Image (cartoon, rainbow, N blue to C red; front, side, top):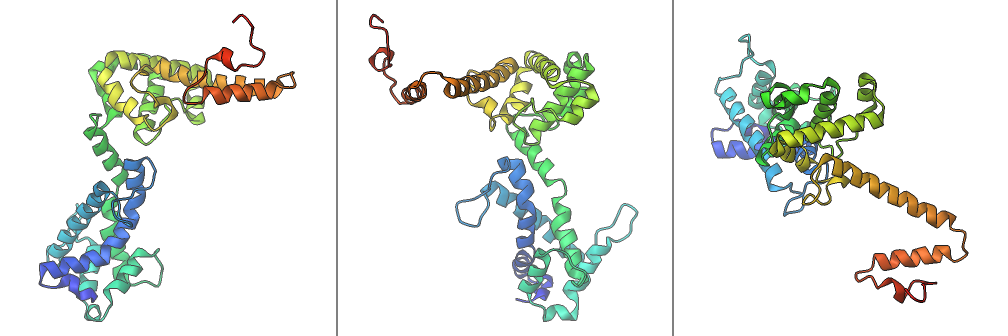
Length: 316
């Protein structure tokens, strides 16, 4: 197929050609933002090998169709204009490229390959303009837009930081500027894929003149206040975004900020104690006893202690 097919009179032929020209590069460019926004950074895969999930494929196709419509209008003379009324130069370059005599002898798939590659000084101006206007321009702020749409679909706020800053119901949370800054930072990080609200950046700690322990204490208080003021907001904008992390392994019973934090601390302390016992037990058979204990604890049906524990009391 030739490049000039994108400018063909037949709408179906033109779309087939445009799909082959632009979609490979568009999909490549969209994969990263979509994976971060919808899949928490994990690989996105659909039912067929080489496909994204249905939602991500739909996002790519929506952007593809929108720009195809723009190109067809531009080929008919309706070229987009800037806010000052001047024609968008890159779109004019694309029109000239698709309608030039050379387009009738240019391989469509070769042009698609060039658009998919990294920019180079030797590439045709039409390739550069197509990559900019038809691939990267429609994907501006894609990650933020998809994150917002996904959050709203789950019942969360479109802009939780705006609600916290402007809403009248959040006024008590703003009474302590330091605690509020920590809360705002935590909610924003969770919206952008974080799982641990207590992973406060060193820069913010320095700016607020806090050590980690004091910051954690203030943040726990702010989260608890948010839970009390707006349980639905807390559930949709905090808990739902934490479900990929270690703090949300049991959302049915763990709901409060204090419980989430202390649960993680308890687990870490238990690991330290166990490591200490294994490393420092003075008895020659100590390591074997503890390993046996761990094996029985982790078995599907732990036995009653007196039936197997070495050195058990005779009148247990």
